[in-house]
Image (cartoon, rainbow, N blue to C red; front, top):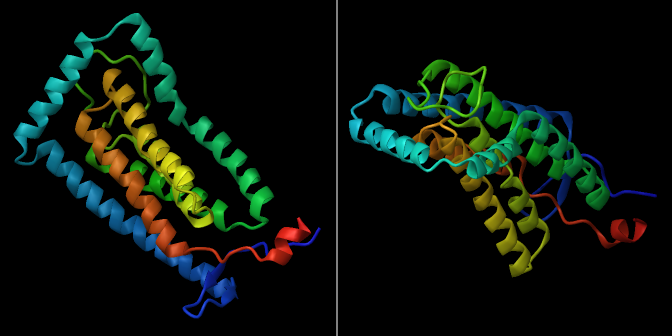
Length: 243
C-alpha cells in the first residue's frame, strides 16, 4: 500500500504543496511557543481582574449562580453531572485523542490532522496549568461534589479541554462540503463545553466566569493552531486509489 505522504505539507499561494522539512517544523514550534506565551499572558491578566479587579458585579453574579445550582441539586442530577464532567478527564482525553489519531491515519495516511488536535490539546493544557497556578482564584464557597488536587478555579480546565475538540469541526470543514456534516460538527463542538461547563458549575467546582474563560481559551487555542499548521493539501486521486 502506497501513500501520498506521511508528514504534513503546507500549500503555497499557487496551490503547490511543499513537503514539510525540519525548518518548517522548527517554525511551527516557535509559533506555538509564542502562542503559549501570549495566551498565558492574556488569560493570567484576565484571571487577576476577575479575581481581584473592579468587577464586583461579576463576582456577585458568580456567587448567585453557584448558590442557585446548589439549591437545584438532586441525587439524580448529581450522578448526571458526575458522568458528564468526567467526560473531559485527562485519561478520557488521552484515550479519545489516541483513537482519533488512529482514525485520522486510516483515513488520510498523514499526521496533519493528528497534529492539529494533539497540539491544540497540549497548548491548551500548558496555558491552563500556568494560568491556574498564577491566578489562584478560590473555588466557589459552596459544598463541592468533587475532590481536586488543584485548588485554583480559574479557568475551568475541563471546559477548555472540551472546547478543544472543536478541532474536529475544523477537520470536518477541511474535508467535507456537506452542510449536514458541518452543522453536526459545529453543534457538537458547541454542546460539549456547554454541558461539561454546566456540570462543573453544578458540582461547585467552578464559577460561571471560570467556565466561560475556559471555553474561550479552548476555542482560541484551536483557531491559533489551525492557523499555524495551515490547511492540508487535498489527497490526490492516486493516493485514494492506493488505499
